[in-house]
Length: 379
Image (tube, rainbow, N blue to C red; front, side, top):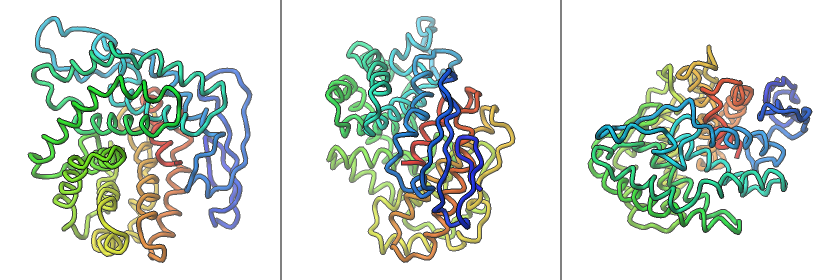
């Protein structure tokens, strides 16, 4: 059985090929009737993303990017004048509970536009970009980083998502994408400069399954650097990835997860290094890094989530989605005949199945960010 957006459905002989019923739980909390969509399960594992899923994922950031409160400000104050509201401090990225979630909420909407949505959804997404992506607002976002004491603000997670957003807009075939990208360019340049200064002094990678994770930031920043043909940043990311991870063996994945992980330290590392090794070398590296992968239930089976409304425990819903994304990325880079690929695809499907019903749980603790990780898992 598989459950997608809250509905249990059977598959044919457990072979991951049977049809799936996807039921719209009306993520926007509004009145349209449920839509029932029949798609093969394998499309949940190797997208192009079904256009029927786009409004389900887009509804959450469309609602939350303009929602200022509640807001979790990570705000260093240099004096009384810095006691300001989230929107005054961050006129673009004030919604979705925190700065980085707002950034990747826009990334999700850019990916929705890239998938050629229906006119009504496209118009709603365009309106959100048009109302926030302007020169004056981005000037204030950029100035925020320049204030004393803010060198580590959103490092590296928010930085990486900002670069991913810039990449998404660069690659977006839309008549206003260039203007949206151009107004954020000064902030992108600033983040790039900070990344170039940060990596050489980071002697040890941060392997935690939360925002400080080094590997996840290297993945997103590296993808951006290659997309824009930024040789300097690409070279530094490749060098850092190899320096941090190339010699690692027998990673203790059995100790994952921790109680508030939304990333797998081991799997994100495996994805990061897959970006810099060829397929045959990568297969050898992977076998040495995770030699007992197919017998390690703690990573093959979805994490249990005891409380989907708890702000930390609900991270595990995101972990299940990011694991699925990682497993698909890893499988794509391994040789086609590699023995672990079937287990990766089967486990990815189980993780997607476990997490999707909770993307729109009614609890803002998850709803402010989980749709992005669902998009990662499903693309």
